[in-house]
Length: 205
Image (cartoon, rainbow, N blue to C red):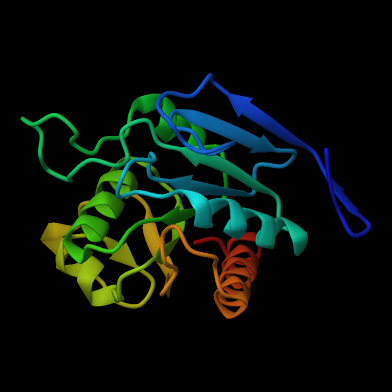
């Protein structure tokens, strides 16, 4: 159990032993489930270039505002997208898709290479039928996602090029890997989550 002011949340830490080095809780191939399956924060697996530190801060910030958040650290999240024939390629497995789909909303934390960011989001949302908020270090917009067939709230991909079940609802940029997340970015994320959850609960997505 975790207490935030007068609010108490039950968090199951964690499903799976974890592989590799993740620094505390955020280890690859692990799932920490909240008491209610509302939001799941999806993190890339840790490595030299992928630092999971902001994910814990983002999660804590959301929980402090009363948002029920699970955390999934992908087992093969740190590799290069579309590098199917090389070691270290990015991937998401059926168990991870099922874990994401148990929730109402995904918060996907990615990195600082735009091409990698959009392709990783496409790979996740190709299988996960869920609205998503993208948190990233690099500057990216709805058009960047729509260009490669990802459904978004504001920009539609070409009709015969839709490649995802899930949809990008909001984007929060400027969250640097390995550094403390600024308060204004936490506030921006909380606002995005609350507005998207309201949309999901009242109108559907």
